[in-house]
Image (cartoon, rainbow, N blue to C red; front, side, top):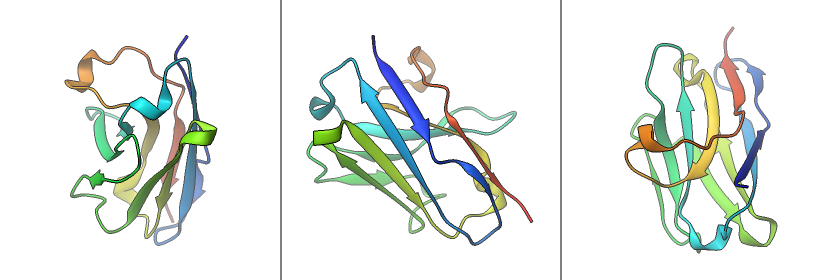
Length: 119
């Protein structure tokens, strides 16, 4: 019953911005730390951002720190990722999900949304 629906991806040029959205259901959203993950071809899925249940603390992977901003709206069961100054190496499928480790044991994923950064 856990459902995660990502949207907002697309094709952009380096330096441009995108805002990703995630609609979640099937669990008590406001009780969970939520994350954005991404997976590029040939690479392991990695966590790029996380936000605590009340939205009072955030954390980012070094690769995106200073460029990405995660936020959430518990009234809407939604989490967002504002992506600025995009680089070609940000190209990946982006997923939202609950925080859990190890990532490889997470079995329920949404379809994700493709972000392609290219000239």
